[in-house]
Image (cartoon, rainbow, N blue to C red; front, side):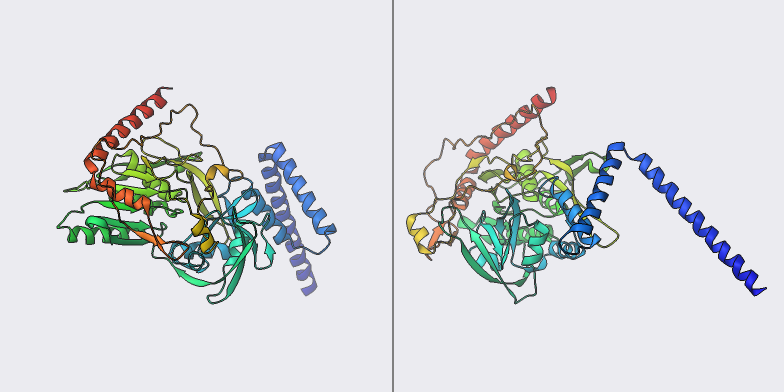
Length: 476
């Protein structure tokens, strides 16, 4: 009797497993049939390659490592900003956007297959050691970075606070490679700094857009307004070498400065990626003079801010052409706690400009000073005349996407009057020879604030030109 029951139990289990296997097979067939023939064929090729590698590679290699490598390579072939984030890298990203992470403080990209510095973050080990934008990282410790992925590079540079890492760098116009040994720190970034500058004008510097950036800007503005009797006298918003960050923080920062109106909008392949962001209407809004400083290191979220304030006629943008990253990356978590960082949309300024691979053109162009021979001989590691890396130079960057659109370069015409009285002092930085050097771009920004009525005329003219360009583009 017991034996008969065991047999019935065995056959029941066997039948169940058989039915389950049929169901799985049916699902697989349906999925295969749903795929285009070429996709199914390529998946077969991938599976064959995977099998061959596992069977014949010189050393054993796990399926997980091969799949991770395939995903990494697939996303890297799309554009410079899409990437596969392992669980460790995904956790690092979450920590980084909160403004505290362990490492060196370098914003990096890949240019022509070479790991390249976009900009060091202020007051971090890399910044203090004199690492500069456009420095090429040849080695991290003993590992060459040729064809290394961004994810792998970040993993090598991150580490426990107090541990050391040695970077071997190449800098244009320097004949030999040089090394810097950095001590990792827990990087706590204060993304907003503020101070009063010449003639009591307000100065706010945003180094990156992270959680808490917009509230910090509001607090700084409140302090300046209280000091100036209720209204800010005039403001310099410094976005130079700001690599970007969180879109919502950029939107909230712009909202502080304009009284309603469009800030930015995004367009992608799906309806969920088509979004518009507007500023709120405010009571007793006061439009004080404002200058935004940008350069080739200003990217992504900082370009959203500069472009919105420029298109809305709220501020004069001054400096040099920006980086040109006009794409939106969406973080898509996966079941194993990893994630995809995938480019899903382009963003557009209020006047319909896509700055992808183009950048924001300043209303007033002011180049930084060229280094002198004395400066080069001082330390040898602070060379600032490298051509800046921009989005359009990155491997696999995607195109602007605006065909036939009239692009006007805003006027750089100087005001007719007054032209005398250029400031002879301003914010100063540390020169390589240890002496103080003037920040000519900030000096110019203060000069614009001092003669705002003249520049405001040019600003209104540029706004009218931009409106005409938008109307022409829509008509084409």
